[in-house]
Image 1: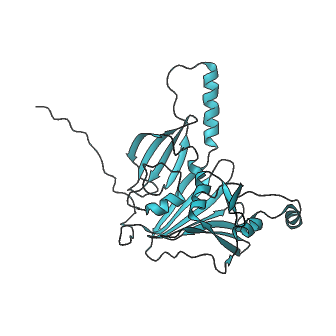
Image 2 (image 1 turned 120 degrees about the vertical axis):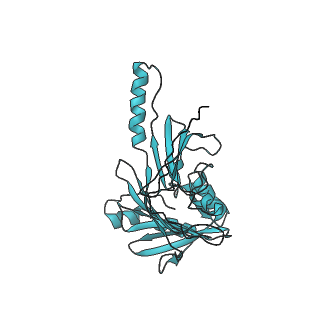
Image 3 (image 1 turned 30 degrees about the horizontal axis):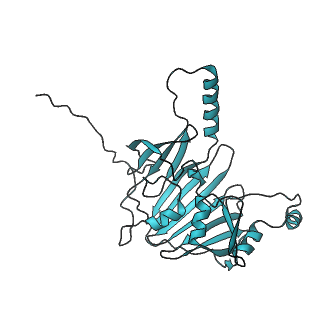
Length: 286
């Protein structure tokens, strides 16, 4: 009798102790991510969870006086969206269905209460890291591996094949359980097989197989260069904390969606006065 054994080693390194959870097992604490690309764009993303609710705030490194984000509370039919500039802060309520449409379709709604219509301009609020994952398409999972990340040992990595000759690695931890109602809002476009928060996301160009002619090789090289310019998200820190507070910025003034849009994207003449050159910066904001 011959018995064949395959040796596996369980990684015990890592400092992700049993995270704080609410009575239903959902994560309580703060997760810090970094979004960056080779072109110099760099943002800090701070996600605060208390089991039921979530706050997601983004601070762009190039514009340290600007941050923006959202708060969603369990069972609400609206999302609070906020914008802070030069230590002044404004917020507005957006219907949950409008907010989800904005994220899903990568559009920004400007809600006109008079006509109950929605005009769409600008860039999406967040979620474009998964822009290649078409919710109606099938993303092929090629591997799922145990993959320690920044000393956190309970992390898995899934590799997906996506359109445009790209592959994508997504790292996550099943130990960090996020309420589906929350996940659907903050990462609407992420692969459905990942039931919790993506902690790290990177795109890469898969190795080509078989003989290729000169033209194919040129296209391969171009694809590799283009993939390197894609945004990526890296895990910065996980702080499990049962007292994580979810509040709007201090002294935040409530305004209508239309007013907030005018604050974020001022009219050209106002812009010219304030900046001298009329520069128009686009942020991933409302």
